[in-house]
Image (cartoon, rainbow, N blue to C red; front, side, top):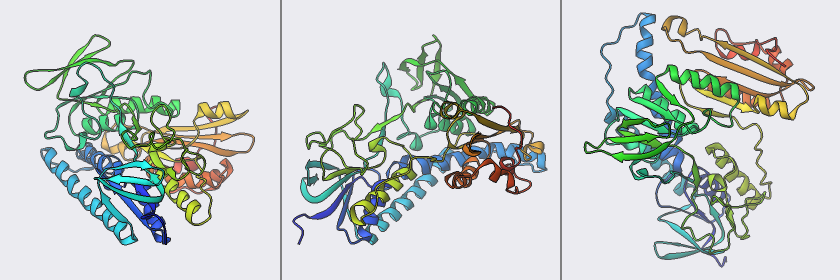
Length: 452
C-alpha cells in the first residue's frame, strides 16, 4: 500500500494538466488534479477558444458587404455584443462540463481550490493537506501589464471577453499574437481601433516579409497601426472614458485600453521556492529534459516552464511526461517544425524557419513567393491579398519553412506541417498535383525562385 494519498497530484486543470492527469489515470495511476479558477485552463476559458469564436464573429460584417458582388443583398446589419458574449459563455460552460466529466470518468479526483506546495511530497488545498509521490505543476501563464500612471484602468485578455458593453473606441497595446488578433476582432466588429506597439514592426519572431505584409493588410481592415509608440499615462475622465497619452505627444480618448504585452509563468504564491524549486528570473520553473524540477519529485509542463507557449505543445509535454513516468517511454518532445497560426485578418499560418533564420543556417537557399488576390475577391470587391512563401535549403532541396497570409492559412499550413515533418523536398511539392481552384494549390505550383 502506498505511503501517499496519491501517486500524482496535478496543480492546474488546463490543457497540459488535464491531458497528463487523464493519461496517467488511464494507466492505473491514482491522480488528483486541483484547479481554483479556469477548468480547462486559459485556452478554453480566456484564450484560444473564445478568441476564435470572436474572430469568426468579426468576419461577418465583411462577409455581408462582400456578398453584394455575388448578387446577395443584406439589410441593415447590426451587431449585438451581449448576444455574442453570452452565447460564448454558454459554449465555455459546456466545455467546462466536458472537461470535468472527462477527468472524473478517467478516474481522477477533481479538487476545487488553490493548491500550494508545502513540501516535496505535499500539497495544501483549502486547509487540507494531500500527499503525493509526485507533484506536477501545470498552472500556465498570466497576462503581464507594466505599471505606469493609470495602469489600473486597463484590461487584459482575461477581462476582454466579458465586457459589460462593447467599446466604440479601443486602444490595443502590444505587437504579438493576442494584440494583433484582438485589434482585428474589435475593428471587424465596428470599433474604432488603434494598435500601439513600441517596436519597429509587429509580430516579432515571424518571417520579416510576413510581418510587413500582414501590417499592410490589417491596416486595410480598419486597424490604425502606430509603431515606435507607447503609453505614458492614462487618466479616467468624468464620463468614464479614458484619456491616453502617448510617447509621441498625442492624447486620444478611448472606451477601453487592452494591454496584450506578453504573459508570464503563473508561479507566484504556489510555495515553490519555499519547497526548493528553482525558478528563472521571469518565474518559470526550471526543468530538465524529463520535465523534472530541481526537486526530484516535482515536475512541470506547459506555459509555466516557458519553452513554447502553445496549447498543443502543453498537450504533447503532458503525454511525453506520462510515457516517461509510467510507461518507460521517452519524455522527449520534438520542438522542431511546430506549426502555428495568428488569427488576424487575414490569418497567418507558418511552419519551419523564417527566411532570416535560413540565411544564417544554410550556405544557399531558394525562396519561392506568390502574392495574389484570391479568387473570391475578384467579385467581392475586397482589396485583400494573399501571400505564400516557401524556403528551401538548396543543398538538400528540403523545404525548411512555409509561410502564408490569407484566408484559412491555419487550416492549410496544418497539412503542410505533416509534409515538412516527413522531410518533404521542393521536388515533392512540385510533383504533387494541386486542388483546383484553391489558394492552397499555389504551394505546389511555384516553379521559379523569386530570390536566392
